[in-house]
Length: 183
View 1 (tube, rainbow, N blue to C red):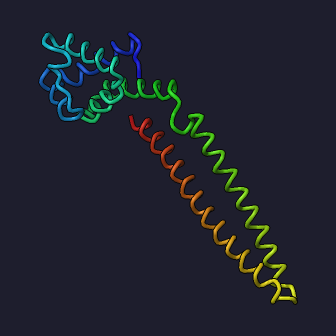
View 2 (cartoon, helix red, strand yellow):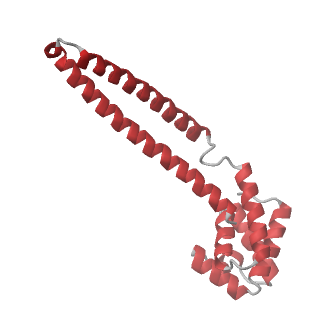
């Protein structure tokens, strides 16, 4: 999540509002992100320290982690929550989500197509099975019937696997959307 100048300024003001002294900011970074504020930002006044912190997080691409950690550490600070929500929603719009990435979309489409084909195949096999059961020459068709039943069982297992994978993708999408809405 790369931040533009105005976004960095808004985040700086929000962090200073949420962590009004160096010690509280230092604790949050240490406890939530396992980072040493003094190593990152050195010494100086709070405004300079927060500026350097944001610069470092921005250049090393952990701004999103910083924003989430700050919100988790001080969930009651409305200014921080408002800035975090704007930044994270803006970031989500700019960056393709896992659910909208070309790979995930292609994978989801392939699952749906495979699922449909297997459903059609199951219907055809069931139809063939019913025809064989109605056949008076039952002995000759027993081998075919057993093979069809085996195929139906295998196809039903594949359908269950696809259902599970589709459900998992849907849950991941919901989780990402609720996480963004929660901020």
